[in-house]
Length: 70
Image 1 (tube, rainbow, N blue to C red):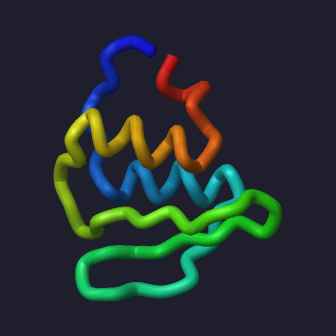
Image 2 (cartoon, rainbow, N blue to C red; image 1 turned 135 degrees about the vertical axis):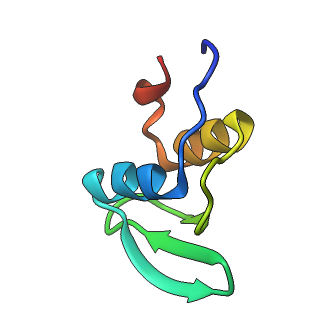
Image 3 (cartoon, one colour; image 1 turned 120 degrees about the vertical axis):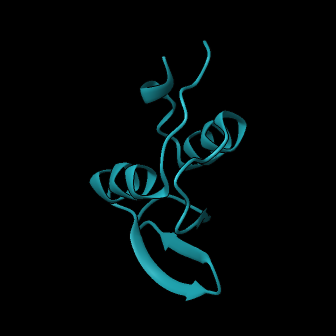
């Protein structure tokens, strides 16, 4: 994968929701998402103006939507 740009937490949440992830709970400054078919829980720090590229890469890879990164 090439260099990943920085995203805001709003942008990451929008990408996850477009892929079918649904907000299940909020704990402090973290939003937790579940998918009806995919396994696992995605945790996104929110609100954040910038999420570091490594964190973006990790979230999208775990969510199974790495194609955005290429």
